[in-house]
Image 1 (cartoon, rainbow, N blue to C red):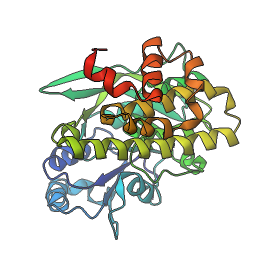
Image 2 (cartoon, rainbow, N blue to C red):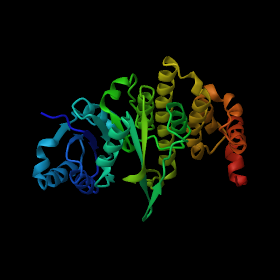
Image 3 (cartoon, rainbow, N blue to C red):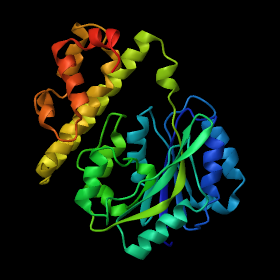
Image 4 (cartoon, rainbow, N blue to C red):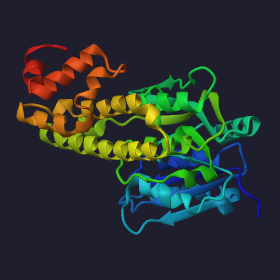
Length: 325
């Protein structure tokens, strides 16, 4: 049996509205040597039934498809990890089941990887905002280098998503700490792999269609919205702490300023949930190790440092109500 060029991992949960378009875009890839790994994360809707109907329309791809079933709902991060255990492709990429991809998604990424002998290749993407699909460019800082791209990812200058990165299969063995929380989990995985690469490459073309879903927060009432913000902040905090632990154990102390900024981004996430002075304890207790260091971080603006000071002193809610930032 020949080794596939690319393995695609797709966790499936609660996407009956989108899975047909996702599945068809994957089955219609111009690259033929593709392995598909769908992971049913105990989806409560008809997503898997719809997927099976779609797969039935592509009998020539049947032998290339693997379907795993989680015994319990484990979330996207663990579902991808489960999928990785059965991937046999030379390269691996993950796709979210509510998104879809261009027909030449795999072909162009793999061709670039082969041409450059790259360990990781990334591309631009489309991001849905309302009815529009905007192109999000992801260029490297000059010629791609490992350190510069790690900094770009930590600073949010590039999207740290697994779906925009084709990765050599063996790199997944470099993941020492697999995230157990579902916020910033892609970044936590990706940056660990970046420390083990030798060569990077970039495809300056949008090949992925990312549906940006704001409804989980915008449709929630005030109290529920606050609870979700706090939970997401804590999930991000846990994963970034995990990532920093990995870097500290693998000679990555030179990125300490970038980690201060990344932690500040996590703290900033909870600002909309601060309504009283006592709520500001959430700010102080999130990444408390940077409560002082953030004021000397060159990546944080003066305005943001002022907001941080107000939150630390418990004054942010009052100022937010009476002044416009």
